[in-house]
Image (cartoon, rainbow, N blue to C red; front, side, top):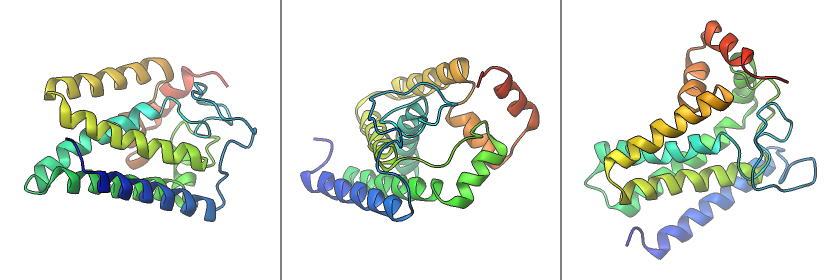
Length: 189
């Protein structure tokens, strides 16, 4: 068994706290367009980061996959449940932090997310669910499968939308104008 029932209850509480925190910060519960879609694939649309899933969902799965490895390295003596909850906490902190004005403005200044105004509550919570899902996948499959998923999804998102977890992280931390120009050249508003 991957995790105990109480671990999933605690994760659900974390997701609820995350959602309430974002709502208290003024983020809409759902897309302002009034619809809920399973997938939205246009990264330059006002619906990006507003619907259930989008191109950045792959990055959240990869967060979970990579954080499984990180917590295995730094806390392998801890139970799998403890590490899963630690991933849940890190996802909650990231999602709330990512949706502060400071980080939203940073994304808009240095990445291709020029029209990014933060996530809807539902998108943010689903992002955290996919991060947990990535962790659970990593707990069950061989390392080569994890590597294939991370490399494959990064290659896919880089090829299709010229962005992904690696590029987004690079540009957020250490923006490179040539990378941004390359990203922008491949995308049409």
